[in-house]
Amino acid sequence: MGDDLLRDDASCREAFRRGERWAMEAVYRSYVPLVYTVVSQGFGGFRGFYDATTRDDAVQNVFTAAFEERSRLAYDGIADYTRFLRGLAQNVCRQMLEKDRRFARVPEVEASEHHALEAELIDAETQRICAGFRQTLGERHEQVVLDRYFGDGAAEETLAPELDVTRYRLRKIIASVKKKMARYLEEHGLA
Image 1 (cartoon, helix red, strand yellow):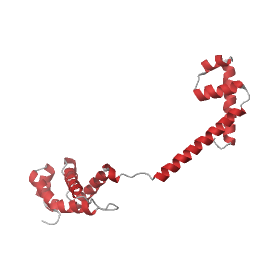
Image 2 (cartoon, one colour; image 1 turned 90 degrees about the vertical axis):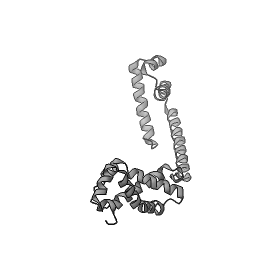
Image 3 (cartoon, one colour; image 1 turned 90 degrees about the horizontal axis):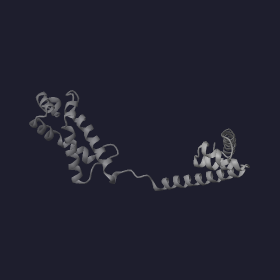
Image 4 (tube, helix red, strand yellow; image 1 turned 60 degrees about the horizontal axis):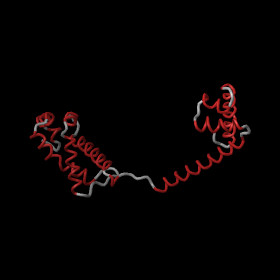
């Protein structure tokens, strides 16, 4: 028997796949040093868990995942089980880090303040430009259409009697306001 119990011992591998207790105990004893190394020394940019309790939790979580039927059956017996288990351990550590709020990535305050200020300035400029557009409308009907139809979302059926015009005439006013609005917004770089 070599350094890789499950790869080298076919009877243990088959018993492990079936979920026999003795095989799982043998796998645990054989591979716990590897898992402990991964969770304590880390990988990639992760430097490992410093707290002994968290390390122990991570080791147990790794073996819980490794002993699930899906994981037991996923190992083919050809490749090194150490690689398989190392990958599983890294995934479990990543999941633990994502769940732990102490390790959550928080956006930089400056960036969020910058975006909020930028959005506020854009809103103020847009409101100023829209207020300027209202001043360019000469007819009272056009101003009412801008406020009620475009602003409040009033239906043509209710707006036509308010203005004392036919629906045909109202549609002409709406089309005129749309055309003027598109031209005005384009001139001010908002279209």
